[in-house]
Image (cartoon, rainbow, N blue to C red; front, top):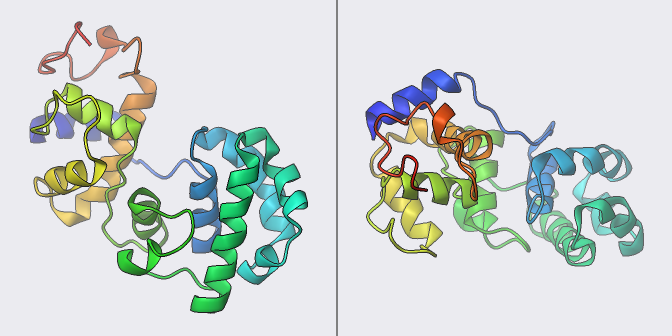
Length: 209
């Protein structure tokens, strides 16, 4: 596991969040929007969204239809707009417009689960967090880094705890980034590019994924 991670560190020496953001509020909004779409696509709509609604109070008071129109290209725009307005209202009313810095508080916000909370903790605040998305699930399963790799639909929280137990907290955020980048670039869901995989010498799923 750790030898394979060292190789991923060489392949992705300076990983960073693919979502564009300038502050914790922008990051939590962008992360909520990233569900069921790509970070690249999210980055095409957030400049207008952030410019029109720079503070949580601004977004909380927004006309839902205006927000829907901005985020329409992302799909699921009605449900996402509802999440954003609820999130903004909760931030404004309960936290003075600021994004909280703890997992326990973050997951009480509308539309925010552990994955989003970990993204915010690790990338906005520098607090160790290990976001588990579909890429992380797929790559750790194919590498058999986790005990439940045979299970088609594993519990993300269990995966988070098991993987985090194997690495120091200061590695968690970059570890997640590298696994995500590897899943996007090489270890694709349907046709993994095993021939160009830097882990092909040790991956137990080489050429059979």
